[in-house]
Every structure is written in C-alpha cells, then in structure tokens.
Figure (cartoon, rainbow, N blue to C red):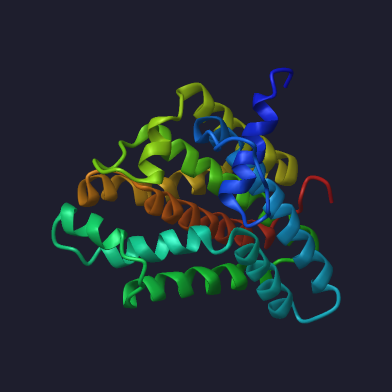
Amino acid sequence: MGDGRRPIGFLAAVQFLTRIPIRLRTAPDLGRAVPWFPVVGALIGLSTGAVAAGLIELVPATVAAAVAVLSGVVITGAFHEDGLADTADALAGTTPERRREILQDSRHGTYGVAALSGSIVLRIVCVASLGPAHAFAALVTAHSLARGAAVATMALAPPVPTAGLGADSMRSVSPAGAAAGVAIAVAAGAAATGWWVVPLGGGAIGGAVLVALPVRRLFGGVSGDILGAVEQVVECIVLVVASGLAMHHALWWR
C-alpha cells in the first residue's frame, strides 16, 4: 500500500458500489477498484448479517430477514437490483441492438418488476430460514461471492459493443486484478463458512454461467446492467444453497 493505489482502489470501490459518501481527489480508476469489489461485498454482508443475527433474537425471523435484506438495498442504493430489472426487461427485445436499447431505458416494465420483486422475496425467505449464526455467515458469503462472480464475468466475457460505464470498466480490468478479486471472494466465504464455500462457490459459478452465457448471444456481450444481474442471481443461489446446507450441517466455528 506504499504507493497509495490500494487504499484509493478500495475507496473507489466503496464509492462505486454503495451510497456511502466517499470523496476522492481524482476520478475513480475502476481498473484499480474492481479487485476490491468482493471486499466491499463482504463488508456489506457483515452489515446485513449483523442486522439479521441481532434482530432474529428480538422479532420474528421473517421480519428480521426483511430488515436485513432491505438494509443491503439501502446501502447499495439498489444498484444491483436495478441492473437485474433492466436486464429482465431487455430480454423482451427481438434483436441484440433492441435489447441493448432497452437496457438504457431507466423505466422498469413487467419483467423487470417481477425479477426485482422475486429476488428480494427469495433472499428474505432464505435468510428467514436460517438461525442467527447461519444467517450472518451466509450473508457475508453471498455478498462477497456475488461480487466475485461479477468480477470473473468482467474478465471472461466480452463487453457489449457500445460505450457505457460497465463496458468501459470491463475493458480496464486486468486478468491479475480479476484473479485477485475472485481469490478475495473465496477467502471471505471460506472464513465465514469453512468447507461450505465449496458448494456455495459452485452455486456462484453456476449462477454466473447461467446469466453470462445466454447474454453473450442475446446482447452481444456484457454490460454494467448485466453484471448487476449476475450479482443478484448469484446472491440468490448462494443463499438458497446455504439454506439447504444449514438444515444438515453446522458452521465450522459453531
């Protein structure tokens, strides 16, 4: 960190992914910020996990889960949820050009609202099914792996052939930076859940592939909105897998 680039990259990632007021002296370099995305995700997971674990002891589990999940939406300003909704709406387009055009429309249609609502409901139900410790660990892992999956997608999938913040940031990501981001995501998940990170990581890979492979054909590449969809799908899948594991296994630190 002696050259100052690492803390600047972290602060740029916080500024980009959250609504936390961060002021930088220069414009953020997304190429430096991207490897820090899973770190920011883990911190968001720590926050939402702490809310869930604390409230589950005071109010019904569903209420605690709803407050926890929605607190994450507030922290990020529904950043990823917006990408999921835009991507779902754009699937109604008949050509890659038309789909990319719909992505640029800030209004949400039926598909987008359904995808957005479904994501929030599914996450709440999954978290509500977990005890305090499991909810905490699962949220840390889900948020970190979801950002790690988005980073991996940025490195492996081609960007859409149009200008945009997401496409431009994808072009600035180095393979080494992307690998570091993925490694951080896995490490955070392993610290929180131990061996669970293997099936949870498998779910994350499956979710990323589920989104990234079709959109390459449907959109001609990946955009920032589609990366938001990757994050949301992976977060949901990781929580679903965690809810199943929690039925039969204890966490390593319990």
